Amino acid sequence: MNIGTVSAASIAGMAFSLIVSVGLPVALFIYGWKKLGARVSSFFIGCAVFYLVARVIEPMVHSFMLSATGDKITGNIVLLAIYGGLVAAVFEEGGRLIAMKSFIKELDLDNAFMYGAGHGGFEAILLIATTMFSNILNSLLINNGWMAESLASLDAETALSTFNTISLLWTTPSIDFFFSGIERALAMTLHICLSILVFWSIRRNNKRYLLMAYAGHFLVDAVAVLTQGYATVAVTELVTAIMTGALVMLTVRICKEENAPDDAGAPPMDFHFNPDV
Image (cartoon, rainbow, N blue to C red):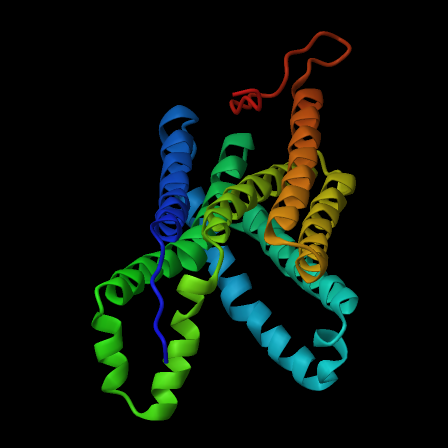
């Protein structure tokens, strides 16, 4: 086994994604708490619902469905994209709707923002920050020669399995590590927008906004899977950025319309979040 060297650019990419995945959730939390005056509990409800839905319920559904269908779904990129997008949209938006109706006190636009920051922020910390922290430590061990000594102490099968895993650290293009942080920033933005759409669906009793949230989540996830199957990481992130940007513009427009004075000149309801900030 020929252990390579992890480039400085790759380590920089890992550090960048680690900082984004921790720093952005913290910044959003502070902004929602101090600037908007949203409840701290809304952030942590978002965290809890993400974990329950995405880390407990969805894996159970995947285990059942994929074992029942064999490779019919996993062997077809189009079916996999549709299936993955549907499961994520149905359960995460369903969890968002139930949480906002049942657990968030004083549900307003600010607390919807805070909920979305918690949902997307905890996802970033759990999925990317922990991985990048581990990658940086392993990269340092590799570059200092300590990993080779560790592999030598393992049995052949375990050593080969470990080598195949860590080899990604020096074979993966450096730019891909940067894209992990960018992808998380887009995902956090997406979850904030979806949370605001669900909020408006509850506040205005408008199912159209709820359908927008389901459709937006489904489309972004499904298209991401499709582009990953046929294009580079850069193209995938570009497409995701375009779709997320479109959802941001839609959400901002809805916020402006719903906050506008009515025809009689009455002021808008007391929502503090300014989508132009």
